[in-house]
Amino acid sequence: MTPHILVRPLRDDVVVAARAHGYTPLQAHLLGGRIHDGNLERLPRRIQPVGTDLSRPDRLPDIDAAVDRIVYAIRHGERCVIASDHDCDGASGHAIAWTALVDLFGMPPERVLRTLSHKGTEGYGLSDAYTERLLALLRDEPSLILTIDQGSTDERNIRRLAQAGHCVICTDHHGVPPEGPPRSALATVNPVRNDSAFGDPTIAGCFVIWLVMARVREVLIEQGHLPSTTPRLGSILDLAAIGVVADCVDLGMTNNRIAVRQGLHLMNANPRPCWRAMRTLLKRSEPWDEQAAGWLLGPRVNSSGRLADALTSVAFLLSRTDDEALARATALNQANEERRAIQQAMLTVAMPMAQAAVDAGRYGLVLWFPEGHAGVHGVVASRITEAFGRPTICLSPFAPNPEVATGSIRTTERVNVLNALRRIAERAPGCLKSHGGHKGAGGLKTAREDIPVLADLWDAAVRECYVDQLPHPAVWTDGAVPGAMGLETLAEIAALSPFGRGFEAPIFSETLRVDRQRAVGDGRHLKLDLRRADGTPVPAIWFGAVPEGDTSPLQPGASYRFAFELDANEFRQQTSLQLRIKTAQAA
Ligand SMILES: [Mn+2]
Image (cartoon, rainbow, N blue to C red; front, side):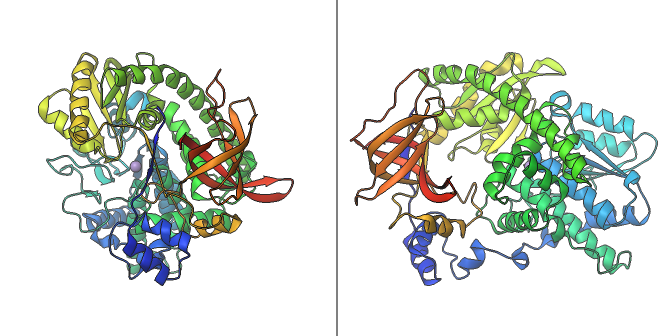
């Protein structure tokens, strides 16, 4: 399906305010498409916030109880157990907790146990299997268990841990069930709780634990347990930046922008061994930016958790020496290659399945892969969602019990995953064995025999959000580039970074004439000489333009409406601007 090229609505009041604040016409145009409220007096501080703009951590629900208990454990030499999710956000949060407890607060490393749920064999959260592993591991001594990026929906297993004498503190950012946060946890620090006064429900799981540890440091200093010279938590924000970027949280929000900006700054200015090693391995000469963190680091840190035990990811982040870091980076890189191969194989099967479901009139897609790999579900679901513009659930057998299907969910702008799942749970109690997630993504388990029921209910839940419109893939753009295009255009754009979900990287759309085209690489990519309406020539590259076994979709001399990003092209030590084409339509 060729995506529709759409133009973002522009808020004129934002454009005017941005010009008054000294932004260039291009920058004001971009801000006008990205800021949706009238809070404009402190516009520059919204775009480039500083540390003092962070929301106050003491407004997070239960944070005082959590901090007091962690401080008590540190001061009394209790054993602490980190119990984190296995994705990049979980691994980042895990590394933050460990670094804070051991490196900053001086806990003996042997008193901090590192555990992560195993995606393939234990599933998400404090599952039965993961809880049994914890109970066996901790049998010899009651411990303080800190969940990271998980736990809000796991009352049943938290109660088992508490009954065995352990104290559980949940730190999380996932949805809380209607009956409230887990009662058996001593504290549930979660910004999405109904009673949260924090004011920002969009922060990542790694950032929740970062805020908790920032408060723990303050209290330890107040109590005289630590010197006031103890490094601030800001010194380890690099570990949060990667979790924040990889979790695709809203980058229009101040807290997330601070984490990413300051974290990236640390990754470049004072890189720890892991960042240096990955740059060496990937032969990357440019500094880390949010795109590289999202596309290069995120998937690699995620890769070990997708296919095996995510401890390698945490060990990579915590590497003390360059040699250690390089060995772990190499292992992650290899896991990422394997993940890509599995993903490619699954996509080859998934695309025709999705097409068939679309042809059958489905708005919401449920795809079942009897041979599928749960480790790459999420990525496949997001590719399908993007390609067909329809919210998608990818399911495959749950390894410990193949009668159960486990799935990942991705969605479009219109459909809130958590709301849709709640509606399904209401209409067919028992259809969902477990479910969780947030607005933009989620996961579930269902009995294999219930998949057809789930498929109908998911389609119905999606359809309710599309009563006035047929779902279709779309590329949202900023319209035509205002004024000339040059290398300085790139600098103007970069000054507004970080970009990501909620504050999208600019994509423009213009009608351009094709002067010349030539296939490059394996013949699927096109190098183009295009011409703007005012006659200016612009070079362009279009990766994957030519479908396999087909010819170019473009005719020389004809004009098309292109959607494109602006990119710097380095050739023979000369840098020039080129367009990176995303899609084209007849003009
Ligand atoms: Mn998360």
